[in-house]
Image (cartoon, rainbow, N blue to C red; front, top):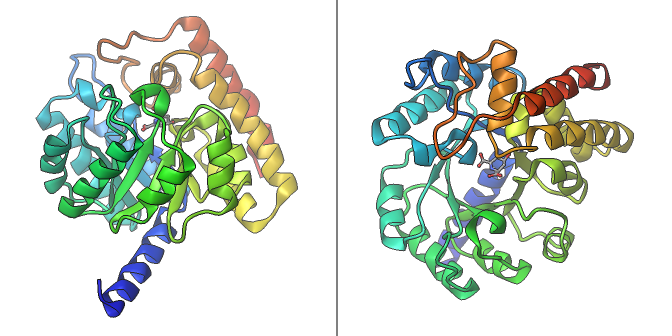
Length: 312
Ligand SMILES: O=C(O)C1=N[C@H](C(=O)O)C[C@H](O)C1
C-alpha cells in the first residue's frame, strides 16, 4: 500500500475500533409456540437493548443458535437487527463463516453490516499459521471488516497473543472477540500492549469485568440481555477510571453471568427471558435441550437480587 492509502486505512481502522467499543448484545432467537422465529419478540429485544445503552447488536452470534436456523430464518433475524441498528445509529455485527475458507468467503460476500464476526475454524485444528492464512484470505474477499472470534473451547484451536498480533496487522481485521475461558497468559500479554486500532472485545461473560479492567475495549455478552444498562455502566466506569463503581458492578454482574452459563447457552437465558414475559417460549432447538427449572430459578433469583446493586 502507498503511504496515503495506508494513512487512510489506519484512520478508518481507528474509527472502526471506536465504533466497536462498549457493550454489544448478541441476541437470542426467540421461538413462537409453533416453532417459528418470534419476529416481534426479537424486534422488541433489539430495541430494548439499544434503548438501555448497548453500543450495538450481534445477529447470528452463538447465542442466536444460527446453526439451528434455515437460510430464510437467518436472513429475517439479520433484517430485524439491521433495522433496529439503522434506526438508532448503533453498530451491527453479523456472525458468518464456517471452518472452510472457500465457503466462508462465499458467505461473507453477502454480509451487509458494520463488521462480521468470524470464528477461528472449528474442528479442523489448522495450526496458528493456518488461522492467519484463513483470515488473510477472508479479509481479501470480505466487503466488511472482520472480527476474529477466538473461542478455543468451541473451536479446538488456540490462538496465541503473537498470532493475535499477526491477525491485527491484516488490513480488514479490526478486532477480536476474545473468549478463552479465563484470564490466561496470552490475554495478559495482549492487553499489556494492545495492537494499534484493534478492538479487544470480551466474549466470556464471567471474565468480562476482568478483561475490561485490563483495558479491553468492550464486550459481546449474552448476559447483557439482562441488566443491560448495568453492563454498559461497567464498561463506562472502567473507561472513566471509576474503579470503585466498576469493581462493585463487575463482581455483581459476574455472579449473574455464572448462573446464566450453568447450562449450555442460551438455554438458561431463554428461561429467564420467558419467565420475565419477554419471549413467548423458552424453547431452543436440538441439539440444545431446555434448561432445568432449578437453573432458571437460580438465574431469575440472581437477576432480582442484582437490582439494588446496579440501580443508580
Ligand atoms: O453470542 C455469542 O457469540 C456469544 N458467545 C459466547 C459463547 O459462545 O460462549 C458467549 C457470549 O456471551 C456470547
